[in-house]
Length: 574
Image (tube, rainbow, N blue to C red; front, top):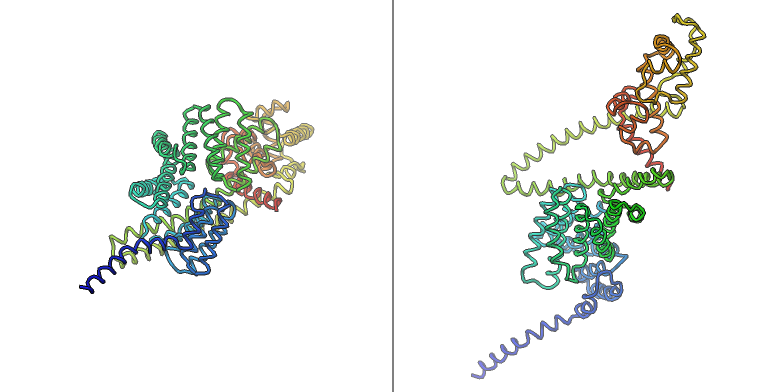
């Protein structure tokens, strides 16, 4: 009886002690430190002293999970040194060799590159690494976080349909998770994932021309975030989309008010990319109201953001076209040239990002997803056979394409250099001076006095660029020279070595080629404008003549010249 009594007493004591053990665990040194800062606002640098205390404790105990957690807290609270904390988290995760930790660390650093700096190349590298570790750990929350980030990059590249499919997947996952019973911190993360997925879906629908669907999603987002102080960042995103929608529905005054409020919310979290979008659409709204004095300071603010961060969303490039046109109209050559240079620089950055990101995300994410799906339908032997054959075929095609492309580019470069050599040596595209030499035995039955007089008039005609007159004919020119068509045609054929049409065509092409090479503003002109500038009737005629005379396509000549201009600008800046 005594033994039974003692046993029951021991069981009762152990049962009553369990909450005490839990409390002792809860009151660990880590808990005590974290409790003092965990509820502070993002980018609150006053929390960093406590965060550093937390990481020092974890270092001394060689507790890698706690140390990574501490560095992630540092990312959240640091306003200016997020990358340093993110690098430290990756370093410690690699030391731990824990795949879950490495996934979280790479995802955190990729998010810093994406959100705080818009360095999409670096962000994509880290997201793809996180994706690989996430697949091995089968953590659905992390997999969907990575999928969301990759979808954002797809949206940036303009693959809106593909991005939309991923955002639908992530919003569905995060919505269901946010409706379940979770710890408050997990609930917060899932709700943010849901709201951000909705925001990005709205962007995709807007760019796909489905504005009504975009508006309905924006209204859902606003209804969820308007009165919730924890999600004011997301509230600012939905306001931005509402303001853009108001602009496209010609509600310009409402659009300006909404976008100014959205800009304020985005500025609080230092999301400079969306701040620039707000500036741009505020400026466009003022322009639509006919108030250019109010509009252009906002367009200039977009340029300030670009100068500071060297990043520009593709949809904002039209901002520079507005500025260039405005200063061209007002004959301010310096500012026109400045904004033209900025546009060239922005296009250069966008073009540089686009092929790298699209190739990387296809090869290392889309293609892997396809292979994962096929692995459930085919045996490993079939997949291996298919892949080896496909890769070999692709390698052969790629090699042939590279050889062809290199050969083509070399030919184009040689042709371009030949044209450039003609221009820099101060000769026209046709050697007129050599043809102007009086021949010792001319075959013309025309008085030498008349020949000399017409040759002088032709020389003046060339020097004054009279050939740029639209609709010029042999008859019109003969009338201007006070002679007849027969005399003029014969002299051109004898002394210029070609008929009238070819003569005028080569003069015009020589003129426009020189302008494209020496005057940067011509590089911004459309083909129609270039044709008008040199007197040619249509863009098709201009393109055909330019290729015939110079041996290089007009589009290729402009592309190479733009590259040279950007290189010259960068060299000047260095």
